[in-house]
Length: 282
Image (tube, rainbow, N blue to C red; front, side):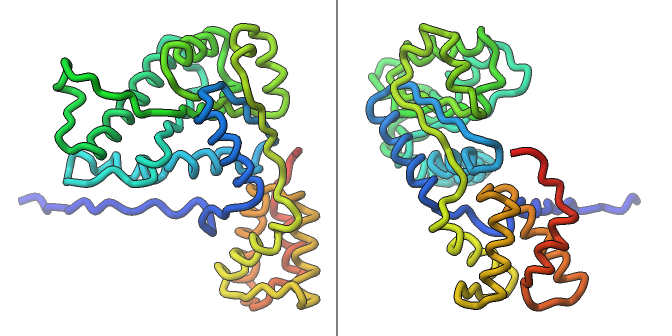
């Protein structure tokens, strides 16, 4: 008889050393998103890669909570996370070569599905898929489209049409210059009420951010310590306040410390880690 092998799912390793950190730039994004959601406008958010635009948007929308809940929604009784009920926001990333028709179908379907989920969470007796004769409110209030600068003209026109047909706010996230790209589409551009530039980490947030990484490596960050202060300055200079570069640099620092059995995040360790890091252009 063939040997029975039990399949055990393995959790994916974390893609970040530390959890998302609330900074001044994230709080500014929240203010921007709240305004778009409240006034039902189209908002454009732009900034260099790696600054944290996507992380801020996913955190605002509760996207991680939704992904975790959505995997188990049919296998057990679970309640929609409170973060989704509070945000009423859909976070969506289009495929690279998505067509306008598919984009319209997916955004409309996912936004409608989220609205139905929120309705069921607020009223267990509500059956949006069955109660066709009952006027069920549309509770998705904001749709965030990440990587929107990859969309072609037809797809952008479909988003404008979706926005016109639904009482929702819409945020388009892209790279620097994306806001000028939108100016080539007058009908879409005329509906943009807010624009937000996502910037590098503010200097006042750097100590707090680095303290979390120090703690993850089993150290205590002391800004008054000359070694910690010099290492922090080196990290800030190398990364320019770019969240993604800080994460990658700290990952290499952890590797260097483990290989050499070091217990201090010294400037020499930072520069050694920098030699193994592809910084690229910013």
